[in-house]
Length: 262
Ligand SMILES: [Zn+2]
Image (cartoon, rainbow, N blue to C red; front, side):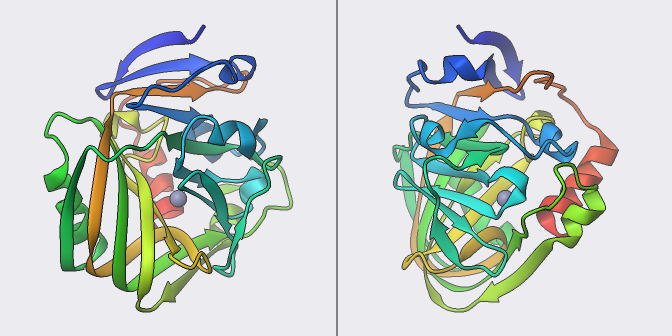
């Protein structure tokens, strides 16, 4: 049985041991997460959840693989990984993840998007579409993009690298005009220990040849679909706390460096 941790930033969060994960059948508005961002930032880079198990919990999402071996993109029930050079491969079911979040995605609201330039401007269009009371939102954008600035990361050789080593292993790159799919989530500020607060998006090209963690983009035209997530089930490794909610300036600075390239 999942342990109910109550509301964190407006999302009902419960936690689960790995042995219980296989028995859980996700509800439509329920996201599933492997471990927490805090654990990843503390250098816990090896998880025990397999990609096959992760895909039983959802068909859209993102994360990384053990030892930060690239950026994980889950789209249409398929797990893809963007390598450090930006090329994309299919992930075998027996690969494992130290951090990922997925949901069974059903479009709840949708709208068109056209000629919008910049990450903040694009996510502002998605924010407008989201119900005002939705704490957590899953999004999928299928679009012709003008350009995108992406990031991926090289596999770590040590199990617990310093934050500086992990940041040094990150590579940023650009792609030009193409058809692409963007997937991800908006988490509330109070979910900072669990997840990246605000928008966390990964992109893959329509031909599945390139992708990564999305730092910036320009959209020419496309379609946005969203679904609110009212529950989050977190599968926690032993010794990892859930729900250390609230502001933490040092962690926020580390997150900005790790995830936003700022
Ligand atoms: Zn990411």
